[in-house]
Length: 225
Image (cartoon, rainbow, N blue to C red; front, side):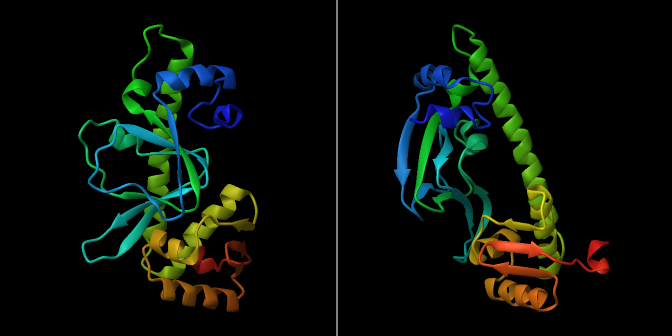
């Protein structure tokens, strides 16, 4: 267990690594490795534990009745998943949680996390506070994705997403966490249509890109409105 890494995550923010070690037994913590594309949680399951990504990353995948799927969000190292459903007893998951790459997941009992221990230790209060902040931030991220997929055209969805990535990275050049298929799923568009639009934008001098590396060169005035 990498307690130093855990102390740097949002969930264990402001809690010393030595104190985290003593807390994990209280939270019924357990680790598990997953291979790329392995399902961690399936839609329809009820869960009691949240997952914290120690290494690798996972995708939250929404599957449709017709057989197609859509990546709802991407969870990187240090972030958590399934907290909303684990907090509501008996609530079934509506999405699959799938390893986007080989990953190590730390599972924590949500009921124990939300309930202060008998000693009412200050560390547990910090943990609950951190969880509330994470959930608030997740709501912001959900709203951000809704903004990205609101435009009708693929170009405007791309410009919305890429502009946000540039702002978050503080640079016109940045790396996104998605493959082309994952980006298409995230923006709710067809992959071939996405690739075609990226090619047009590159030819028009709006962007340059290679695999996951992008540079925003110029955004036309009509796209900024």
